[in-house]
Length: 57
Image (cartoon, one colour):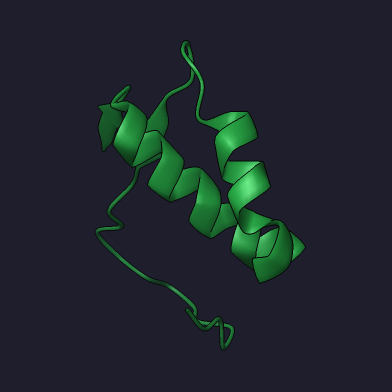
């Protein structure tokens, strides 16, 4: 697990999450709204996958 408070990384993660959840047309606004001080990007690296439900990138 890694934690990051880097503004550029926060913007990247928040924008990509926004695109997945809210659509590409609202992704940038979502990213800018959520990439603010006192927020943290958390990256998890799974060590074992038990099941895969067809989730795509």
